[in-house]
Image (cartoon, rainbow over all chains, first blue to last red):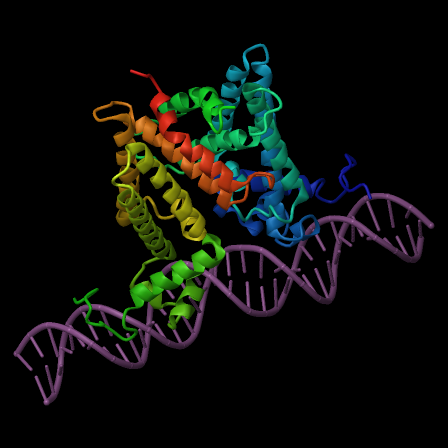
Length: 204
Length: 204
DNA sequence: TATTGATTTTGACAGCGTCAATATTTTGTG
DNA sequence: CACAAAATATTGACGCTGTCAAAATCAATA
């Protein structure tokens, strides 16, 4: 055993972690499509087939990268919430949305990976739970704004997520016309969110 | 010459169009990442190097697919606008947003391609102009709601695009929790849009 | 110390995109 | 009509990729 304990289990030391680090690096540098398993092994200083012992397939490795991306992402959102814990729910939600877009913009590659369909989402339990944690983080901030016990909080949270994800994606992939200042879009759209979610759906 | 005339210029007949058709088919079936140039050539019934005469690189071919996707997309939006031409600007914008999400859901593969960063966006003029046409289509519908001559219509249009693109992406890539009914999110969020864009940004 | 098991390497395979050389067909011109 | 020129398609090769099986290496344990 001693598989992931701190006991420096083997030859390389901890190849599994080294592979995740190299893969993350590659994806941050050149986007998800720039990743290749062989180059990743090269960066970790091992032969091209060595990863097989830790990840059955290349997809499993990038699923792990995506899962850790979600964990990092959740931490960033939580930190934003903590920093504004003494403010209003509206301010807290706004802060979280800003943190959302900031994370996406400063981790373009991994963020793109996290929301790409084929990221091993179906196969990796780790990835699914990490993604769900992100959803719950956002959901909670929305619930604080709409008030407790509402039936349609889910739809409102989905609305918020859609908006910030849309802004993040279009900004990252440069699909806005050049005239558009992403910073301005983020500022005005995010600022309008608390009021907007109060009026989304039936007002009762 | 007679390069793209109707004169059945050659051996295959019209390989260029056949390649675009095969590529579109592949991407719709298995997503953008399932495309390979060799399989595409196979489907078109030619050798693996035949595409070289019509597209210098594989990226050029998928850029063409993306460009046509945008053209098809613009047509779908325009059709939605036409169908609601006798209604209010609000209803027209709503209809267009519904058409937007409907298109994305019924052309998952190509839509994913259209908004993926590496789609030859930088190199293909055709792709850039087709994408710009889509933006202008949406921009116009937004302008009709906010009223003419407003300075912040761009930001409002970006807001609308972000929301519908976010809904479309998250739905397509199945990133909403299972509890969420995409149909409900689309209905409520899109319905709230006209009112929302009136309050986004400075009210003056 | 010997054996076991985990880890890594080596070598092979098919598939990929691209390129150069060759073959074939169409088009344009004398 | 014949022939040259241009356009189009094929063949074969190159280096790259992910995956697999067999052999080699090393750590821990019995």
